[in-house]
Length: 250
Image (cartoon, rainbow, N blue to C red; front, top):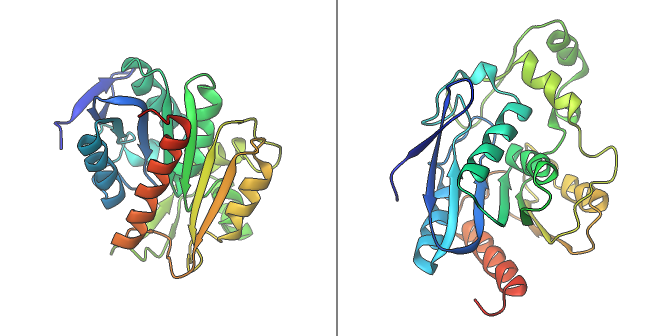
């Protein structure tokens, strides 16, 4: 994998990213909550892109992975602005946004910010609006009062925090209440054994997208992460089929 580069934001925080030049549109992977570009899906996507000569960009949000910052300061708007800044600094013409879990929420916000650059989107257990449907009413009250809440983390020993600023920003950026003005191709992958994000949320997202070119793929025995070799193979085929359909001469 190529070396880590850093993009400096206006306030001085440095955003880590890896970029592989190649044919476009550029694949841009957006990790999930408390995740980074070292994950198995991101690594597999980058390796595939390098092997096939496709351009690919991986990004660590501030407070995650190799980027500067404190995770407690992170919000969807802050991370969207970082992704947009890295895309623009790299002078990318067209991008395919590939968002995993929270990254599937973030990709909708990035697409809204860069309407002329986003070629298409792929959601992997996309989780838009989880600050609304994924948090108990009592916990919402605590967050509104400025308290951080902690939940059991099935993927590690430390509990998962939700900070008040992140929650408030999420509530200000809900996507599923009105039609989503995106008209390009969208592919949504979701495991039906996902215990974190209900798989019917992908159907709801399909319904709210203005695009007619939306396909939803359910993996019956798939969990939330969709990081098994078979799951990653589905993702790679989805990427390849999407690019081939839109770029038949590549």
